Image (tube, rainbow, N blue to C red):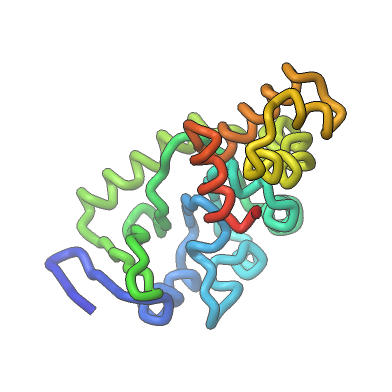
Length: 218
C-alpha cells in the first residue's frame, strides 16, 4: 500500500475490501460507474457492491452507470435488471467513456486503475476538492445517461443477434452473405452491425471483435 496526503493507492481486491467495506454500514449515498459487472465484484465477497446487500437499509440510495456492452450478455443484462427491480438500484447506461468509480456520500471516492500481474490497483481519495471533482463528473455522466429500461428495449434485438453477428464478422463474411444467413436485408444487417459497434464502443469491426472478447461475448 502506498499512501499520499489524501490519496491511498491500494493493490488488489483484498486490500480494497479491507479499507472500504465498513463504509457500506454507514453510507447513505453510493454512486458507481463501471464498464461491466466485473470491476467492483470481489471474489472474496461476492455481494460487496451488490444492491441486495445495500437494499437491506432503507436509508441508502444506490446509483449505477454502466457501459452498454455489458447488456449484450444476457446473464449480465438479467443481473442489472434484478438489481433495479428487486433491490431498488437506479441504473443508467452511457455510451460515453467513463472512469470506473465509486463515490461514498460525496466524501470519499475510489478510482479503479490498471491491472498488473493479475491485480488491479485502486486509488482511495479523501481530499474534498478532488472528491468534489470526481462527483461532478459522475453527476454529468448520470444526467446524460439513458435509463436502463429504455436502453435495454433499444438493444434487445441486437443482443439476440450479437453472437451470430460476431461470429460472421470473425469469419470475414461479406455483408450480403451474412445478411442472407441471418435472414435479414443487407441494410438491416448493416444497421445491426452499426448498433452492435455502438454498444461495444467500437469504431471498427475489428475493434468490435476485440471488445467482444474482452467482455467474454465470444
